[in-house]
Image (tube, rainbow, N blue to C red; front, side, top):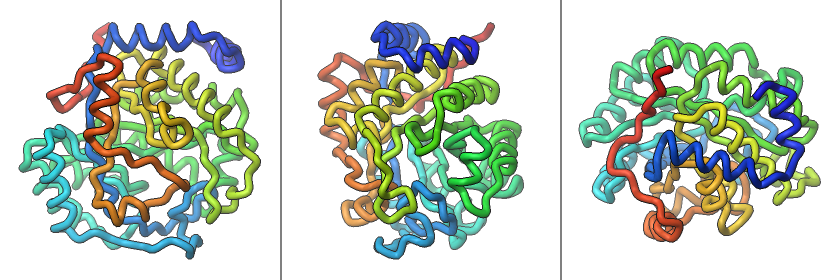
Length: 325
């Protein structure tokens, strides 16, 4: 698809798109669903992104930071539950320096799992240190490729630096993930098409796409948003991404389930092949509030849902098997 075709497809409500994306998913990545255990180890963040409940200027949430021992213990629990990948996610918390993070990565790698990081913008050397310690994947969502919109939503941040970080990750050999929010105020269908084409240009290995859900502790908290419309558009963006990047990993995101009780199932039937169960302890997972009313279904519940649509649970680490053209 070129940009015009993507725009026209996003504007359409033809269900054939979702069927096509699901067929491509089945052909190129199979029926296995990869479960990746998410540990949200700090909700402290130095950034002030307009859409995120963790933003520094939101003083209405309880801040926390897990210890090194707590993080490793949660990873061990995840491994013992059969998870093959551990995802470490946090706000941009400068407390965790390179040395500390590398120690955590090395300990978790010794469990024989893949390690994914989602901890924001870092220097080239820091990314290199994490990779040398054993990190396999890195998720850094661009959120929007519309430079003006990006600047509006991310005070004191640089769109160009965000891009530089993504290409640094690719250069260092990470499986590189990115993604976008769908339904942001002042976002256009044209810019969403540009997002999809950027994923293709970057040759991203994993793409996370989620509907925008307003958080009351942010400047966008009072946005008049049709959440179901955002969900449906997110599914279409995800489906087109699957069609253009046939062999990548695409999660059925938690935000989709937070809007619709079967949001993940809809996504899995429209091109997704990954679910990230939250294995953070019960107290702290409630405090990692990027958006309100976040769905945190248990691993057992997710497995039951997966089996209900006759999909399989993968028993491998789920690295991208790239098509050789």
